[in-house]
Image (cartoon, rainbow, N blue to C red):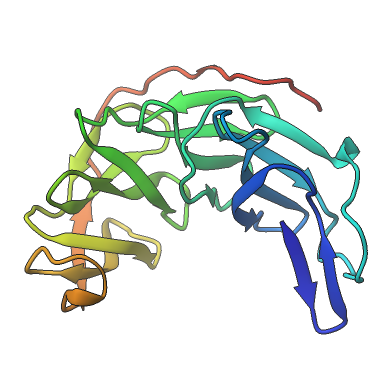
Length: 219
């Protein structure tokens, strides 16, 4: 992981293979996925970098500002909650989960079917919802789930490839999500991609409890 501005650049990690570095909303921390050894499972880490730090060319920092949040995850995109308290990620079972950065408590939000994977999450502005992409063998569709409970609902249907969901506005009472889609189910550069929007409102459902996460914890 490197950080860079107009004055220079700085290497922030110096071991293993890192993916998806993502700044917290206040710019003080970076969440990232790290595979320490070639045959090891990736894990979710967070480092403290200070609010909008000055960046200089230099060597990697030591490990005193880094800690493991979750021991085993998938190497997929991460997304901080708007309040900076949680990070959404794809867990080792291919489901969408969140982890509390302070306590390390992990909450599983979805139940991905066999041969599917839930990822690419996007938080609503108030943090009560997450839209994500469910990747199956022949389609990628959008689903939505409340951030404090298990149980997802579909927003789009295949066969198609839907990507890059983003919320618009506060959503009171209706939410609008924009996304890119290949309507013919063609992936990559070979497909014809268009921008679409879907509109929906909240639903009632009982909350699910959080469970303890894996990995060492530091306050």
